[in-house]
Image 1 (cartoon, helix red, strand yellow):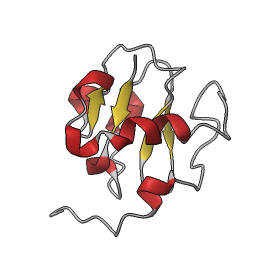
Image 2 (cartoon, helix red, strand yellow):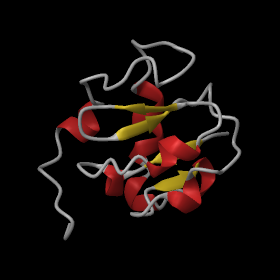
Image 3 (tube, one colour):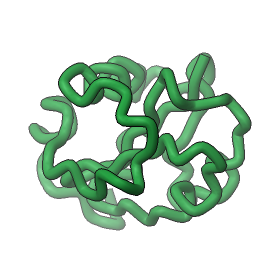
Image 4 (cartoon, one colour):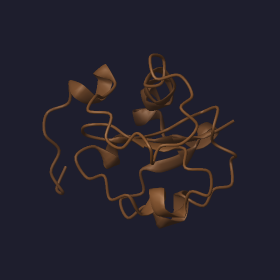
Length: 108
C-alpha cells in the first residue's frame, strides 16, 4: 500500500509534503509531485500537510481521481527506484495523464 498524489496538486506543487516525508520518496515532475510506491513507508506524514488535499491513502482515492494511482506507479517505470528524490530534483517530465491536462488554476 502507498499514498497517492491526485489532480489537486497539478500546477500547484506546494512541496510541504516533501519537507515532511522522512524517506524522501516524493518526486517532482514538471507539473505535479509523485509518491514512489516502493519507497513510501506508509507513514502518512505527507497527507495532513498538503494545503490542497491532493494526497490520499491508496484505498481512499476519490473515484474521480482513481486513475492517479496508476499514474503515480507508472511515473517511475523509466526512473526505477532512485532511492531518494532530493538528489534528482525536478525530473522535467510528467505522466501522460497529468501532461494532457489543461493548465490548472487555483479555481479549478
